[in-house]
Structures are given as C-alpha cells and as structure tokens.
Amino acid sequence: MSNDTTPSEYVKLISADGFEFVIHREAAMRSGTIKNMLVGPAQFKESVENEIPFRDIKAVILEIVCRYLYYKWQYEGCTTEIPQFDIDPEVVLETLMTADFLEC
View (cartoon, rainbow, N blue to C red):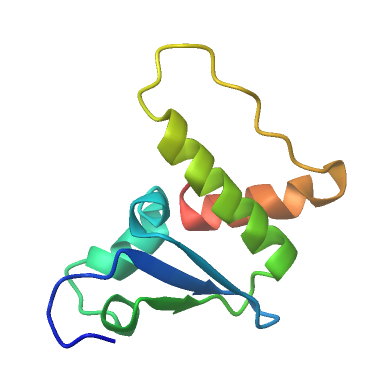
C-alpha cells in the first residue's frame, strides 16, 4: 500500500467465507454503507486499508452485490431503456436483505 493520502482506485470486499472481490472504488461508492465506511466523517480502518470484511455476507451474495454495483454505476443517469438485472430466485430474499443493509 502506498504512503500517500490519495485513496486507491480499487477496494477489496471480503465475504464471510473468505472470498475477496476487488472492485472499482467508484462502483463501490454506489452503496451508501460502503461509501460511509470509505469516506465518512469517522476514520474507519476500512478507509485506510481499502478493505472491507463482511462477517455476515456469503461470497455468492457478495458477488451479486458487486455485479449490481457495477450495473448501477454503468446505468446511473441513463436516459435509454435499462436492461433488467436478473437474480436467481433461490437467492433473491438474501440478496434483497443484503442490499438493504448496504443501502444499494
């Protein structure tokens, strides 16, 4: 990690089962919870290390969240028709609960 104070372009999200997802910081900022951890008024350890461990989010759900954050970033402010974001029916409820927690 560099010693300068500029934030990294990427953030590492770590699932409860140990999987790591490195995503672009701008995509991650589409989540209110993640944004608060990275740039909030309190100096969170996560903002210094650019790593956010999620003890209660499994990799299968965190992967969907990461895809959605990129989807949201890509289509934000779009004036044309936005394609549907599909989620497998077996994980819809858990994904929605996680999305609510992450404010995305």
